[in-house]
Length: 277
Image (cartoon, rainbow, N blue to C red):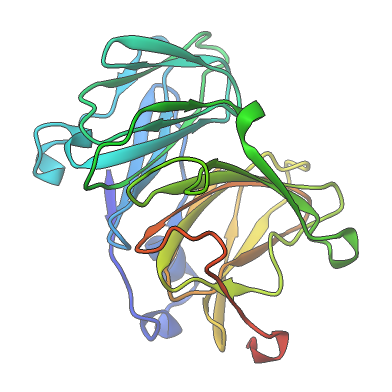
């Protein structure tokens, strides 16, 4: 697990491209047979990839977090974007096909990830946030996700937001997590841009319709923007004070995850286009 620190808005005014990527980009998420995680001081979120092959994998963080086991004081969200796999939670196994999700509550001692076929491994994208109360574990099949169509083709932002972990349908301490799929021919994941100062967010981009495509993730204050170019299956940290938007050279999907003091999904401040710089 690597650590990324929090930054004031004034800090990134002085960053060149390499420094910006070093501080905000997780350039590798999935490595066969391995667990790759990032701990960000932005609301103390942990996020990354678990990619089991021939052997099951378990996240074992204790000393790093000052606890006896990983989820002693944390909750966990999971979405599989790879092949068939399974999650075994305190001895109980659940199958996980592509696009299935899972919420795992605080206090769960053992979470073991496995793939059905090592040649086509599951790719579990995981996000963990601090918790203060135990809520029930819950499997979140893609078919049950709340689908919310957004945007239109004229503005190149036609997309569907699938809400997995969302305060309107289940209880969590602070974690929210979902999956957005852009329609063919659309490229903006949102525009006009917005901020939500009461919670930070991470984005993991994948399923590019063109393997040579790239996503330009835009962050920074509305009057002082920066961008980071992402390849498929890379992730970026978006501070709460930053705008939240991105554009691709083709359509794509991304998993978003948020945490902070407000779980109201529509708690966003829109930025007028003429204020962007």
